[in-house]
Length: 256
Ligand SMILES: [Ca+2]
Image (cartoon, rainbow, N blue to C red; front, side):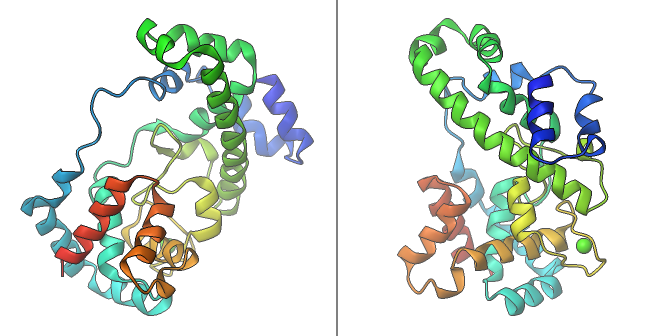
């Protein structure tokens, strides 16, 4: 952890800004990191989102938040149905936003540039997973994740300061995604938007999540996306998974 703190100091963060990391209180989340490298027995079942009960909930949400969604459509030129589809698939409309401490998990991923930290995670993997990965590919993946996580960690520290929040107050997915729309800290900085006009951006508020998704989609070219292929490309930026893209656009076309 000392190496990481030194790097942050070198990159211009003050002692005060990184104090939250020195007093984190949780040991590095090696188990969590190792779980993200396990062989998945089954893929996420996207079909569940097309069941009538889910689509009914999405339609109820459209009605409940009609005023905010209309404003988002006007401000960002992004269809309300696609915004709701994203929130449905990401977190079941805010029901499951994740319980992993974001600061702790991003700093643990950032530590993976150190061989001793990778050794620890390697030992936590099952024999089967170790055989599947091979040490070299495992190291390559974690070194890449470390660079990615360090940048996201910096974004989280900057973001929480801008919002006058404590960085350790954020909880979300095992990959550091937060709130109804599962935004990474870098996306919060670039696309976070205030939908309820209270001067803060809270990704756990539906209004702010709606505006932030709309802002993200505008930023990635949704208003100019004229055909199916172009729209698919925008959704793909949100999550690089073909079933995900198909499901989001399918939900959007079925709800009204
Ligand atoms: Ca707000």
